[in-house]
Amino acid sequence: MTNVKTLTKRNIWFERLMAIIASVNLGLVLFDLSYIPWRDFYKRNLPIITQIYDPLKGIESHRDTENYLDTVDELIEQVSQTGLQSPQVEKKLEELSRLSSEMIDSNPFEAVNKSGTLEKIKNRMRDRVAVKSSKEAFSTFWSQAYLSKGGWKQEIDFFNNQIRRLIIVNYYRNIGENGEFIDDFWRIDLPFVILFGVELLARSFYIKRQYPSLSFFNAIFTHWYDLFFLLPFWRWLRIIPVSIRLDHARMLSLNPIRQQIHRGVVANFAEELTEIVVIRVINQIQGSIQRGELRRWLPQKEQTHSYIDINNINEVEAIGAILVKTILYQVLPKIQPEIIAILRHNIESTIKEVPIYHNLQILPGLDAMQTQLSEQLATQITTNLYNAVVSAAEDPVGAKLSSQLVQSFSEALGTEIQKKQVFSEIQNLVIDFLEEVKLNYVQRLSKEDMWKIIEQTKQLRTQPSVQPLEDKSSTMLVRREGN
Image 1 (tube, one colour):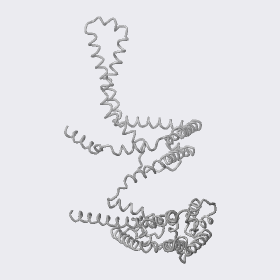
Image 2 (tube, one colour):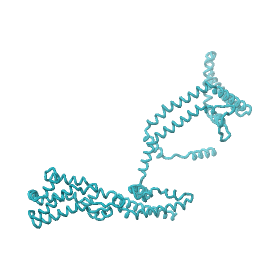
Image 3 (cartoon, helix red, strand yellow):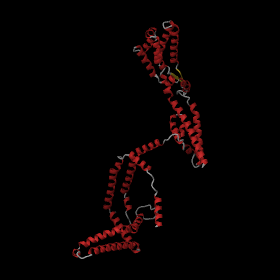
Image 4 (cartoon, rainbow, N blue to C red):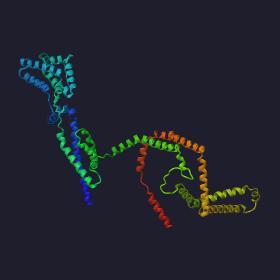
């Protein structure tokens, strides 16, 4: 027992370790998938992340936009050295006007689907300068007259806060020989893939060793969800094996989700499946009746068709014999007092209706004698009838005669029913009855609230279990033996 507990404890800790590693891998996958959409945020707020991760995505600073911002930095440095009105500053401003015009024409943002960023830059510059043309707005902004009028510090702060932060997030992404963007995330993912691949093979060999009749392919598919770790595409699907592993490691419970999925599936398909099954059964019964198979239920002297008998017993006769014995030896003795009471009441009523009885009522003790006589007469009649029935059932000759009577009755009834007119009428009525069942009752299945039925089923499962029937039977047998 100690070894089993230790082994179980080791297994659960191993499962938890692998679940944690799988969660880390999934976190890296989700980060990789979100990196491009979120790169602007990382670039502005956590530039260290972009410095580390950009090379894996083949991302470089775009030469045009980087040159543009470098020129702005040179302008700021020149103004701080020679002042805004110097010839050197004027030359830098002319260069910036030319670079702005080239940026608008070439749109260096388009290659990485950031054309919307360029539109934001143009709109903000037009609003700032109050002109309709974006090129004219940049040309006006990068002029000594405008910067002097608006205030150098105020205007350059506007550029750094509103324009630079949009230009700085632009980048250039290299394309590989396959025509796709370079993505070296596989270098980070490869160790995880190898680890989970080796683990999957080890698990499969272990399962194959425990169950030799199981093929190695089927042994692998006992942990089918781990195959998602090996896919070089659709890596986001790894959320499936990670969730399952966390559940197996008892770090996450999937029971509520699993139950909700099961209930949803049952609720969606139970209605249609129930209707299909019921209608199909009714259609098969109707088809059997239309093919004349109803006759097989009727007694016939000779079977004109092949009928499969699995035990060489006439089940109808056997059931009838069991019912007769049960009624004779079990039921009738228990209800004998009630039968006697009914007969006594009828005898008393009959005696009271006799005209002479009214004249004899004046005699003393007549009522008591009449009651006693009715009791004895009812008891005697009941006993004699019961004994007669039992004797007839136990007497071989009487049983044979009764059997011949039942057989003759069945044959006569079957012969009359099988007459074309009677049988055809019965057959049509049965078919019509089944059709009415489909229209009236099966149709109601679609109106049932499946969610309510499922909830009732769930409540039944949560009810406290009752004593098994076998236990009750055993108790009754013990009591009878004791008595």
